[in-house]
Image 1 (tube, rainbow, N blue to C red):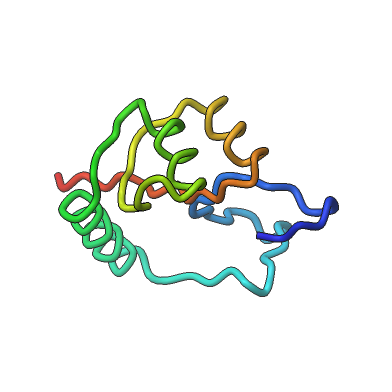
Image 2: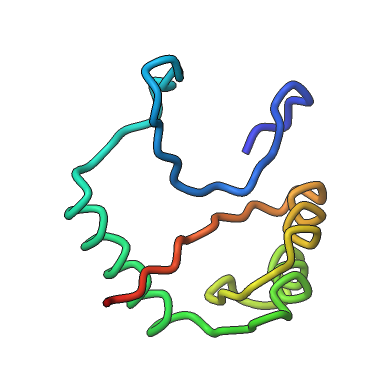
Length: 102
């Protein structure tokens, strides 16, 4: 979300630090695993209820939304290459981990 060329753009997704050697930036925070499961379950349910599934057309729809030609209430499955292209074009993305109830 920064226009500086010193900042790399990347798809956002939760990360789990497993080594004490890893530096945890001040902006990261953690919740207990059971709480995270509840949060992910609710988030997935909300997205699937209120957002349109555009599947493999995500990149096309993201470009349309970025240009103001459609709302941003959609989700889908771009390829890694498409996601990187969108980020290079300045289109912000957030990867939501899919949570499946067992």
